[in-house]
Length: 128
Image (tube, rainbow, N blue to C red; front, side):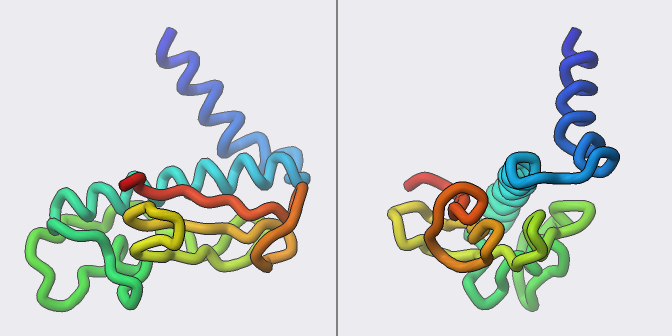
């Protein structure tokens, strides 16, 4: 049963958009899923290294070991995404501006902060 549910999730999350294309809703869902994967990788980095990637290191620290860092056991993702489903770069803040330890942000379809619908910002991160 679990295998069937995981297969359905994988198909809906990764395969469906590639076959049928993506509209605003599927792009938002795919972006949120990708940001969740990135946050899991950031948390693994923190468990191994005792800290989160710095602002300067950014998400690249999940793929390439920062100089002199002890405990790094990456890469933490098969491929670290640099752009959301609309082709705009992800933004990484540590610490975040809203009380989280870090935050990964997509600015939606328009690529600028704020907005509604497809243009709405999405964020994920570690709660303090």
